[in-house]
Image 1: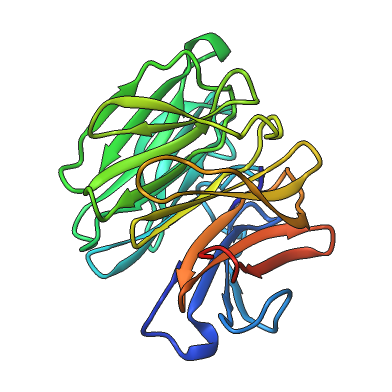
Image 2: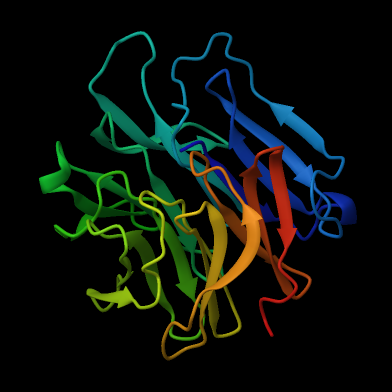
Length: 285
């Protein structure tokens, strides 16, 4: 899937507070700044890097992730040496600098990131494995620069999207993925080393993109159903509830990304008309 990752930059001008990163057709990174007060394709300021003189490329499609660390806006993604025909990809920071963190097989194209509430720590999640029967789930710590296999979970769907978040109430890290049975979405608690099936998500599209945002004791998960419509499901602290359709069609070949701003989640996705923005004002009701 093509990547989309959004961040709220509270110090930016009011009409440019949401920064949306995306994969470009030239296999580089683009940035557009969005207005948090408008839905849809609002006018925005955009920047995109050039393909000229780049030593690595960002495969498109591939997933990217964005978060904060020590006052920096970090974007992580998958990259490879375009001219080498390598069978491995780098899992890397791709903005504001390029820094490889790990490696994975060429067809593993998903990555996610989350930060602690103080943004003093951040963790990157990715998959490895040469085939569908040997998928492994890894965490890279940007605090102590260590890598750990967090699950040898045979139940992870090959090519599953990953959506990571930090729960500021229990101070634990969580990552959501799709199971080998595509009707099952799972939540891994990194700190407890436990995996929980998210009930009521049996309408999920196979290889659905996933996005999650956490705010004040509630996690908001977005995914696509079998009709390519966006669904939202919430966990208010004890268990996941029932999904709610937003009645918006999304292109399943592209990523979803969610951030919290001005009391509501903001969801970014690719609709039939292009990059789109939903202010999910009913989410907290």
